[in-house]
Image (tube, rainbow over the protein chains, first blue to last red):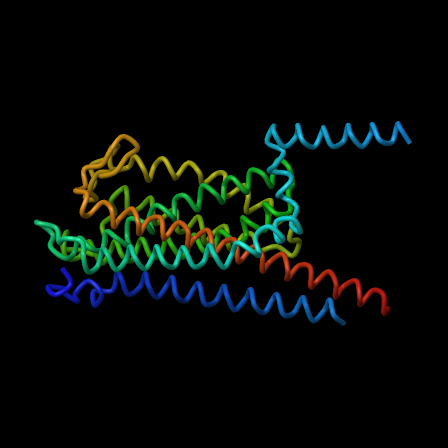
Amino acid sequence: MIEHLNPWPFINGAYGISVLFLAATALLTWRRLRQATKRLAQIEAS
Amino acid sequence: MQSMHSAGERTARGNLSGRTQGGWLHYFANPGRFARFTRPILPWLGAVSALLAVTGIVWGYAFAPADFQQGDAARIMYVHVPAAWVSMSGYAMLALCSFFSLVWRHPLADIAAEEIGPVGAGFTFVCLVSGALWGRPTWGTYWVWDARLTSVLILFFLYLGHIALVRGFESRERGYRAGAILALAGVVNLPIIVFSVQWWNTLHQGNSISFTGSSIYPSMLYPLLVSTLGFYLCFLTLVLARILAAIMERKTSSLLLASAERDA
Protein backbone atom coordinates (compact mmCIF):
# COMPACT_ATOMS: atom_id res chain seq x y z
CA MET A 1 0.00 0.00 0.00
CA ILE A 2 1.00 3.54 -0.60
CA GLU A 3 1.78 4.38 3.07
CA HIS A 4 4.47 1.71 3.04
CA LEU A 5 5.76 2.88 -0.29
CA ASN A 6 9.44 2.48 -0.79
CA PRO A 7 10.65 5.13 -3.23
CA TRP A 8 13.52 2.92 -4.24
CA PRO A 9 12.09 1.63 -7.55
CA PHE A 10 11.72 5.17 -8.88
CA ILE A 11 15.14 6.18 -7.59
CA ASN A 12 16.50 2.97 -9.03
CA GLY A 13 15.56 4.39 -12.39
CA ALA A 14 13.36 1.86 -14.17
CA TYR A 15 10.18 3.85 -13.60
CA GLY A 16 12.05 7.12 -14.11
CA ILE A 17 13.38 6.13 -17.52
CA SER A 18 10.02 4.70 -18.65
CA VAL A 19 8.03 7.78 -17.63
CA LEU A 20 10.69 10.09 -19.06
CA PHE A 21 10.71 8.18 -22.35
CA LEU A 22 6.92 8.19 -22.69
CA ALA A 23 6.61 11.88 -21.77
CA ALA A 24 9.51 13.01 -23.99
CA THR A 25 8.35 10.96 -27.00
CA ALA A 26 4.78 12.22 -26.60
CA LEU A 27 5.99 15.83 -26.36
CA LEU A 28 8.30 15.56 -29.38
CA THR A 29 5.61 13.81 -31.46
CA TRP A 30 3.00 16.41 -30.50
CA ARG A 31 5.39 19.25 -31.44
CA ARG A 32 6.18 17.61 -34.79
CA LEU A 33 2.49 17.10 -35.53
CA ARG A 34 1.64 20.68 -34.59
CA GLN A 35 4.46 22.09 -36.74
CA ALA A 36 3.49 19.91 -39.71
CA THR A 37 -0.15 21.01 -39.40
CA LYS A 38 0.77 24.71 -39.14
CA ARG A 39 3.21 24.57 -42.05
CA LEU A 40 0.78 22.75 -44.33
CA ALA A 41 -1.98 25.22 -43.47
CA GLN A 42 0.38 28.13 -44.27
CA ILE A 43 1.38 26.66 -47.63
CA GLU A 44 -2.20 25.83 -48.58
CA ALA A 45 -3.32 29.34 -47.65
CA SER A 46 -0.60 31.08 -49.67
CA MET B 1 -25.96 6.38 -70.34
CA GLN B 2 -27.24 2.97 -69.35
CA SER B 3 -23.90 1.35 -70.14
CA MET B 4 -22.12 4.03 -68.07
CA HIS B 5 -24.49 3.37 -65.19
CA SER B 6 -23.92 -0.37 -65.29
CA ALA B 7 -20.17 0.19 -65.56
CA GLY B 8 -20.37 2.35 -62.41
CA GLU B 9 -22.38 -0.33 -60.68
CA ARG B 10 -19.84 -2.94 -61.69
CA THR B 11 -17.02 -0.80 -60.27
CA ALA B 12 -18.94 -0.24 -57.04
CA ARG B 13 -19.64 -3.97 -56.76
CA GLY B 14 -16.00 -4.69 -57.50
CA ASN B 15 -14.86 -2.28 -54.78
CA LEU B 16 -17.31 -3.75 -52.30
CA SER B 17 -16.31 -7.33 -52.99
CA GLY B 18 -12.65 -6.22 -52.91
CA ARG B 19 -13.22 -4.78 -49.46
CA THR B 20 -14.80 -7.97 -48.20
CA GLN B 21 -11.82 -9.93 -49.55
CA GLY B 22 -9.26 -7.80 -47.67
CA GLY B 23 -9.37 -4.86 -50.03
CA TRP B 24 -10.15 -2.64 -47.02
CA LEU B 25 -6.39 -2.66 -46.49
CA HIS B 26 -5.88 -1.10 -49.91
CA TYR B 27 -8.75 1.29 -49.18
CA PHE B 28 -7.06 2.67 -46.04
CA ALA B 29 -3.59 2.55 -47.62
CA ASN B 30 -4.40 5.82 -49.35
CA PRO B 31 -2.46 8.48 -47.33
CA GLY B 32 -5.18 11.15 -47.70
CA ARG B 33 -7.94 8.78 -46.59
CA PHE B 34 -5.78 7.55 -43.71
CA ALA B 35 -5.17 11.15 -42.56
CA ARG B 36 -8.89 11.98 -42.68
CA PHE B 37 -9.67 8.85 -40.67
CA THR B 38 -6.86 9.27 -38.11
CA ARG B 39 -7.03 13.01 -37.32
CA PRO B 40 -10.33 12.96 -35.36
CA ILE B 41 -9.57 9.80 -33.35
CA LEU B 42 -6.02 10.75 -32.37
CA PRO B 43 -6.85 13.07 -29.39
CA TRP B 44 -9.21 10.45 -27.92
CA LEU B 45 -6.73 7.67 -28.43
CA GLY B 46 -4.00 9.80 -26.81
CA ALA B 47 -6.19 10.54 -23.78
CA VAL B 48 -7.17 6.87 -23.26
CA SER B 49 -3.56 5.69 -23.67
CA ALA B 50 -2.24 8.26 -21.19
CA LEU B 51 -4.97 7.36 -18.69
CA LEU B 52 -4.31 3.62 -18.93
CA ALA B 53 -0.51 3.97 -18.87
CA VAL B 54 -0.62 6.26 -15.81
CA THR B 55 -3.15 3.99 -14.06
CA GLY B 56 -1.06 0.88 -14.75
CA ILE B 57 2.21 2.50 -13.67
CA VAL B 58 0.78 4.04 -10.47
CA TRP B 59 -1.10 0.84 -9.61
CA GLY B 60 2.01 -1.24 -10.05
CA TYR B 61 4.28 1.22 -8.28
CA ALA B 62 2.14 2.09 -5.28
CA PHE B 63 -0.75 -0.33 -4.81
CA ALA B 64 0.24 -3.77 -6.08
CA PRO B 65 1.80 -6.02 -3.44
CA ALA B 66 5.54 -6.45 -3.26
CA ASP B 67 6.91 -9.84 -4.26
CA PHE B 68 7.55 -12.21 -1.36
CA GLN B 69 11.06 -13.01 -2.63
CA GLN B 70 12.16 -9.96 -4.62
CA GLY B 71 10.36 -7.31 -2.58
CA ASP B 72 9.89 -3.95 -4.31
CA ALA B 73 12.31 -4.84 -7.09
CA ALA B 74 9.53 -6.89 -8.71
CA ARG B 75 7.60 -3.66 -9.31
CA ILE B 76 9.94 -3.04 -12.24
CA MET B 77 7.86 -5.73 -13.97
CA TYR B 78 5.04 -3.19 -14.54
CA VAL B 79 7.20 -1.19 -16.93
CA HIS B 80 9.69 -3.81 -18.12
CA VAL B 81 7.22 -6.46 -19.34
CA PRO B 82 4.92 -4.04 -21.24
CA ALA B 83 7.95 -2.40 -22.88
CA ALA B 84 9.24 -5.85 -23.91
CA TRP B 85 5.90 -6.92 -25.42
CA VAL B 86 5.46 -3.62 -27.24
CA SER B 87 8.99 -3.78 -28.64
CA MET B 88 8.35 -7.26 -30.10
CA SER B 89 4.86 -6.44 -31.41
CA GLY B 90 6.22 -3.20 -32.85
CA TYR B 91 8.81 -5.15 -34.77
CA ALA B 92 6.12 -7.55 -36.04
CA MET B 93 4.17 -4.51 -37.27
CA LEU B 94 7.31 -3.12 -38.89
CA ALA B 95 7.84 -6.43 -40.70
CA LEU B 96 4.19 -6.55 -41.80
CA CYS B 97 4.43 -3.02 -43.23
CA SER B 98 7.68 -4.02 -44.97
CA PHE B 99 5.90 -7.01 -46.50
CA PHE B 100 3.08 -4.78 -47.78
CA SER B 101 5.66 -2.35 -49.08
CA LEU B 102 7.57 -5.02 -51.01
CA VAL B 103 4.50 -6.84 -52.35
CA TRP B 104 2.00 -4.04 -53.05
CA ARG B 105 4.28 -0.96 -53.01
CA HIS B 106 1.90 0.94 -50.77
CA PRO B 107 3.38 4.37 -49.99
CA LEU B 108 1.62 4.34 -46.62
CA ALA B 109 3.33 1.05 -45.71
CA ASP B 110 6.72 2.70 -46.36
CA ILE B 111 5.81 5.71 -44.21
CA ALA B 112 4.47 3.45 -41.44
CA ALA B 113 7.64 1.32 -41.44
CA GLU B 114 9.80 4.44 -41.28
CA GLU B 115 7.82 5.87 -38.37
CA ILE B 116 7.50 2.62 -36.38
CA GLY B 117 11.31 2.22 -36.27
CA PRO B 118 12.26 5.01 -33.82
CA VAL B 119 9.28 4.38 -31.52
CA GLY B 120 9.97 0.64 -31.41
CA ALA B 121 13.66 1.28 -30.77
CA GLY B 122 12.70 3.56 -27.86
CA PHE B 123 10.51 0.90 -26.24
CA THR B 124 13.24 -1.71 -26.73
CA PHE B 125 15.73 0.63 -25.07
CA VAL B 126 13.35 1.05 -22.11
CA CYS B 127 12.99 -2.74 -21.94
CA LEU B 128 16.76 -3.27 -21.93
CA VAL B 129 17.51 -0.56 -19.36
CA SER B 130 14.66 -1.51 -17.00
CA GLY B 131 15.70 -5.16 -17.33
CA ALA B 132 19.29 -4.28 -16.43
CA LEU B 133 18.07 -2.26 -13.44
CA TRP B 134 15.96 -5.24 -12.34
CA GLY B 135 18.86 -7.63 -12.86
CA ARG B 136 21.20 -5.80 -10.50
CA PRO B 137 19.24 -6.44 -7.24
CA THR B 138 17.95 -9.89 -8.26
CA TRP B 139 20.87 -11.46 -10.18
CA GLY B 140 23.68 -9.32 -8.78
CA THR B 141 24.59 -7.97 -12.22
CA TYR B 142 23.21 -5.53 -14.76
CA TRP B 143 23.97 -7.71 -17.74
CA VAL B 144 24.71 -11.31 -18.72
CA TRP B 145 25.10 -12.71 -22.24
CA ASP B 146 22.04 -14.86 -21.70
CA ALA B 147 19.94 -15.92 -24.72
CA ARG B 148 16.92 -13.75 -23.82
CA LEU B 149 18.94 -10.60 -23.13
CA THR B 150 21.16 -11.06 -26.16
CA SER B 151 18.24 -11.67 -28.53
CA VAL B 152 16.49 -8.51 -27.26
CA LEU B 153 19.74 -6.58 -27.77
CA ILE B 154 19.78 -7.92 -31.36
CA LEU B 155 16.18 -6.67 -31.72
CA PHE B 156 17.38 -3.21 -30.64
CA PHE B 157 20.19 -3.33 -33.23
CA LEU B 158 17.70 -4.45 -35.90
CA TYR B 159 15.58 -1.39 -35.15
CA LEU B 160 18.67 0.86 -35.30
CA GLY B 161 19.78 -0.80 -38.55
CA HIS B 162 16.34 -0.22 -40.06
CA ILE B 163 16.35 3.44 -39.01
CA ALA B 164 19.82 3.93 -40.55
CA LEU B 165 19.05 1.99 -43.77
CA VAL B 166 15.79 3.78 -44.52
CA ARG B 167 17.49 7.15 -44.15
CA GLY B 168 20.87 6.14 -45.58
CA PHE B 169 20.14 6.36 -49.32
CA GLU B 170 19.82 9.41 -51.53
CA SER B 171 16.87 7.73 -53.21
CA ARG B 172 14.10 7.31 -50.66
CA GLU B 173 12.69 4.33 -52.60
CA ARG B 174 15.97 2.40 -52.36
CA GLY B 175 16.11 3.12 -48.64
CA TYR B 176 12.61 1.74 -48.17
CA ARG B 177 13.42 -1.42 -50.15
CA ALA B 178 16.64 -2.06 -48.21
CA GLY B 179 14.92 -1.38 -44.88
CA ALA B 180 12.04 -3.70 -45.78
CA ILE B 181 14.40 -6.57 -46.62
CA LEU B 182 16.27 -6.09 -43.33
CA ALA B 183 12.99 -5.95 -41.39
CA LEU B 184 11.74 -9.18 -42.97
CA ALA B 185 15.03 -10.99 -42.41
CA GLY B 186 15.00 -9.87 -38.78
CA VAL B 187 11.61 -11.49 -38.10
CA VAL B 188 13.47 -14.72 -37.39
CA ASN B 189 14.63 -13.08 -34.16
CA LEU B 190 11.08 -12.81 -32.73
CA PRO B 191 10.50 -16.55 -32.06
CA ILE B 192 14.08 -16.74 -30.78
CA ILE B 193 13.24 -14.05 -28.17
CA VAL B 194 9.99 -15.73 -27.16
CA PHE B 195 11.32 -19.30 -26.92
CA SER B 196 14.88 -18.47 -25.79
CA VAL B 197 13.93 -19.22 -22.18
CA GLN B 198 12.77 -22.71 -23.21
CA TRP B 199 15.46 -23.57 -25.75
CA TRP B 200 18.44 -22.57 -23.62
CA ASN B 201 19.37 -22.44 -19.94
CA THR B 202 18.90 -18.80 -19.15
CA LEU B 203 19.26 -16.63 -16.08
CA HIS B 204 16.13 -14.82 -17.26
CA GLN B 205 12.97 -16.39 -15.85
CA GLY B 206 10.57 -18.39 -18.02
CA ASN B 207 7.36 -17.00 -19.52
CA SER B 208 4.81 -16.32 -16.74
CA ILE B 209 1.94 -15.43 -19.07
CA SER B 210 0.81 -17.35 -22.14
CA PHE B 211 -2.37 -17.67 -24.18
CA THR B 212 -3.41 -20.61 -22.02
CA GLY B 213 -2.98 -18.97 -18.61
CA SER B 214 -0.81 -17.14 -16.13
CA SER B 215 1.20 -18.07 -13.06
CA ILE B 216 0.99 -14.52 -11.66
CA TYR B 217 -1.36 -13.80 -8.74
CA PRO B 218 -4.35 -11.61 -9.84
CA SER B 219 -3.40 -8.68 -7.57
CA MET B 220 -0.19 -8.40 -9.59
CA LEU B 221 -1.60 -9.58 -12.92
CA TYR B 222 -4.31 -6.90 -13.27
CA PRO B 223 -1.99 -3.87 -12.91
CA LEU B 224 0.37 -5.59 -15.33
CA LEU B 225 -2.40 -6.03 -17.91
CA VAL B 226 -3.58 -2.40 -17.49
CA SER B 227 -0.02 -1.14 -17.85
CA THR B 228 0.49 -3.35 -20.91
CA LEU B 229 -2.69 -2.08 -22.56
CA GLY B 230 -1.58 1.49 -21.78
CA PHE B 231 1.86 0.91 -23.31
CA TYR B 232 0.31 -0.69 -26.42
CA LEU B 233 -2.07 2.23 -26.89
CA CYS B 234 0.76 4.73 -26.30
CA PHE B 235 2.74 2.98 -29.02
CA LEU B 236 -0.24 3.05 -31.39
CA THR B 237 -0.93 6.73 -30.67
CA LEU B 238 2.70 7.72 -31.17
CA VAL B 239 2.99 5.78 -34.43
CA LEU B 240 -0.30 7.11 -35.83
CA ALA B 241 0.65 10.69 -34.90
CA ARG B 242 4.07 10.30 -36.54
CA ILE B 243 2.52 8.83 -39.71
CA LEU B 244 0.03 11.71 -39.85
CA ALA B 245 2.85 14.25 -39.39
CA ALA B 246 4.92 12.52 -42.10
CA ILE B 247 1.96 12.60 -44.54
CA MET B 248 1.50 16.34 -43.93
CA GLU B 249 5.27 16.99 -44.26
CA ARG B 250 5.30 15.19 -47.62
CA LYS B 251 2.25 17.09 -48.81
CA THR B 252 3.92 20.38 -47.80
CA SER B 253 7.10 19.41 -49.69
CA SER B 254 5.18 18.46 -52.83
CA LEU B 255 3.16 21.70 -52.72
CA LEU B 256 6.37 23.74 -52.31
CA LEU B 257 7.97 21.84 -55.19
CA ALA B 258 4.94 22.38 -57.42
CA SER B 259 4.94 26.08 -56.55
CA ALA B 260 8.69 26.38 -57.32
CA GLU B 261 8.17 24.62 -60.68
CA ARG B 262 5.32 26.99 -61.54
CA ASP B 263 7.48 30.02 -60.72
CA ALA B 264 10.46 28.74 -62.74
